[in-house]
Image (cartoon, rainbow, N blue to C red; front, side, top):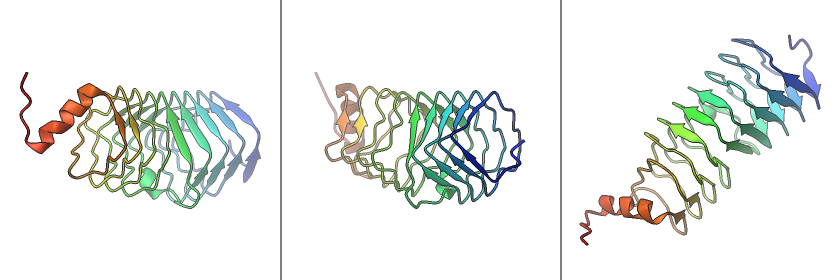
Length: 192
């Protein structure tokens, strides 16, 4: 299906690329709409200024992939190890995505949007998420440990389990109800 090495400013719609080898490909300025990439490999590929809309990216391998200015909107992303991406100039954004059992540990993702996404059972251990936007996200079972969330927006999040003693949260914006949940980690009892 993808016989060429480079694709520029193309719109792909409804592709079914289950377990396809897309290694060493360049996609620049491309849009992918309602495509299913389940189990595909983008090893050592490059995605620049691309948008994925309503796509299934479950179990995709991005090992060594360079991802620059890539937006995922309304996508299903399960079992993806983003920590294997090439970290050079990494720029990625998620809006209204369903992200589960994915790994972001140790990544530098400042100012990244996870806005309105459902992020379950995923790992952000030792990541730099300073200035990132988790507004209106559901973070059920998601792990934050030694994570930099300074200046991040955590407004209206659901299921936030964030220990302020083991994470950096200076100037993070957080809803009052979630602020009360943070107090539980301090061993403080709040009475009315």
